[in-house]
Image (cartoon, rainbow, N blue to C red; front, top):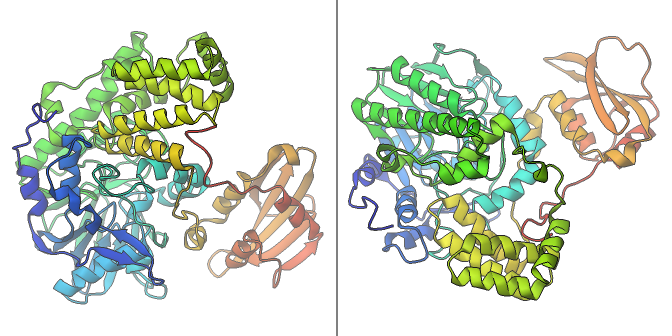
Length: 608
C-alpha cells in the first residue's frame, strides 16, 4: 500500500498545524476523583514510522488526528482539537464566547475552555450551539455551562435535536454502547499493535455525559440569529450525517461551519455501532446546496472533526468531492441493486472513480465503501436479499452446529480453516472459525486461531473502526467480555428529556411475555412552573406499555400520581413515592416495575 499512496503529499499536515497556539500539557484530563477520562499523550507512538501492524494510510490519518491544542481558525474563531473525539469551536462575541459542540464529557469540555481562556482571557460563555444530535457534540455541555450559569444563555440546535438525541442515546443506548466499545476500541491498548485511532478522531472520552436542553430551534434554511453580537446564518440539513443537523455561516468572519457533513474522511451511511440509516442521496444534495447557498461568502470552512480547509476555491473543491462521493455511492448502489446484485455483491463490486479514490478525505477511515454500499442497499430493500434460502435461516448457534457437522466436526473444521489461513484467505477462515466457536465455545484451539485471524485482519485494515472491531474481537476471544461504557442515559440527560420520551424509555424495558396477562392503568399528573399540569395515561395491556396525554379521563385509572418531573425521575430510579400525591392502589406501580428489565452491558458478541 505504501507504494500506491501519495504519502509525500503533506498539504493536510500543513493545514492541521496552521494556527497552532498552544497544547494542553500534559494532554491528560482527569475527573474530580482522579480518574483519567482522556489521554492524548498516549498516542505519542504515532510519531514513528508506520510499522507492519498498521495500514500506512490509517497511520497517516491517525497522526493527523492526534495533533492536540488550541488553534486559531480565523480572527475571532478558535478550535480546541485533540481533547476528545470531536472539536470544540469557540467564537468570540461582544461580551463573551459562543461555544460550538462541547465535546462528549463535561471534564474534557471544561479543559478545552480553560485552555482557550489561558491564552485568550476569561470570557464568559454567552451562547451554545449544537451542530447535531450525536453525543460527541453535546455531552460535555455542563463543562462550559455549569448548573446555575445557563440563565439567559441561548442554546441553539436544529429542529428535532432532542427527539433524536433521546432515540439514539437512551432508547438504543445499551446495545449501541456495547457495540461502540468495539467500534472505538475502548478496551484495546493504545499502541502500534492495538488502537491507533478511529479515523474521525483518536477516541472517546469517558467522563460525565450531560445535556443542557436547547432553547432556540433552527427550523429553516436562511434563519439568522444574532448571539452576543455575532451573526449566524443557518442551513438546515436533516437526514444527512444525523437526523437533525445543520451547517452555518459566520458572515462577518467569512467562516463556514460544516458540522459533520463534510470531514476529512468518507463518513458512515450506517455506523458499525448502529444508528438510523442515513440518506446518501439527501446528504449529497445538501452539500450541493451549501456550495451554492454560501458561495463567495467564506474564506475558511471548518467542521466538528479534523482540521479546517482554507481558501474559498479549496473549500469548494473539497465540498464538491464530498458531494460527488455520496452521490456516486448512492447512485451506483441503486444501479447495481436494480441489476439484481445483493448488498454483499455490490460491496465487492463498487469502486470509486480514480479522482475520488486518490482524495485523502474520500478514503475509508471511518466509513467504508464496503459497509456504506450495504447501508444504501439496506435503506431501500432491508435485510432480506430476496433469496428464499435466507428468509428463514437458523440462528447463529444452530447454524454453526450444522456447518461444523458438515465439515466433519470441530477438529476437522479447524484443520480446514488453517489451510485457508495458510492460503491467505483470512476472510473465509474467519467465517469458518466463527462457526466452530459458536458451535463449541469451549474449543480453545478454534478461539485462539480465530483471534489470530482477527488480529491480522485488523492490522491490515485502512478503516479504523474495522481495525478496532477485529482487534477487540480478538481480545475478547482471549480474555472474555469486559466493557467500559459511558452512561449515555445518566441523570443529566434524562432530566433534559420530555415526559413522553421518559415513558418511551420505560416501555422498551418491559418484558412482554411476563406481562402478557396483566392489565393496568396508571395516570401521571406532572406539574411544573412552565407547563402547568399535564396528565399522562399509561396502559399496560397485552405486554405493551403505551401512553398518551389526556385532558379529562373517561374512566378512572387504578393509580394516579401527582408529581413534578424531578419526582418522576426519582420514581423511575426506584426512590419510592415520598412526597408524591397518590390516589388509588400504589401496588400497581410495583407491579409495573416488576416487569422492567435491565440490560447486561457486556452481552456476548464474538461468542454465543
